[in-house]
Length: 255
Image 1 (cartoon, one colour):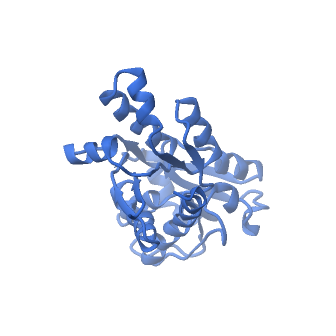
Image 2 (image 1 turned 90 degrees about the vertical axis):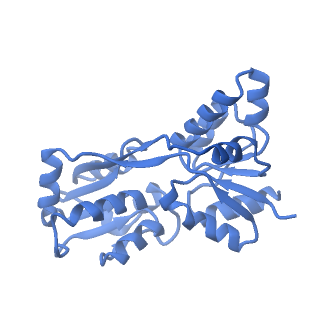
């Protein structure tokens, strides 16, 4: 009987995890725990986009950031500016930009901020202007490290993650499905999952049982510690949010 895995990516991002897991022989479905809501740009942020050619480097954190950025730039740049160096944290984001005609550098191995920060072109940045494109929340490591390397960093927040509207079937699948592993790829998504559990299972004993009935796969040590502090015991750190890292972790669990 195939192992059942439930992923929880936003709908637009689900395929790049779901399809590789299915190709590996797992029975996979996705229930989004987060939805992406674009933010209204402030005057200063609009000016950054108008002056995009003045930035030496643009770092795009996620596929969602790439999608919103590309849609927004249609109003500013009919052709991409020359002389801007583009970077992404993961291959999925790089592919989004590539399809739009933008070639970006990304880590050859790994899909975390730490991996990108090893790139030789991001070591000596004295006086260089860097635009960091991301969503609200998340880690500040990239901005802090690039600033410490003497770059002039502007952080462009393009979207926020919000609670999605799930239908009854999705909620039932999330809460009572018989999957052996649940893939949660951010701390925000983990909090949404816990909120759904608390709304359904009010008694502490029942809540604890639901929290620990399957393995919860998380992308980092930080989210692992967050999960354990919230009462999840069957937690494993995949050390990355990409499909390769998730696959390796599932195989190691020998479900």
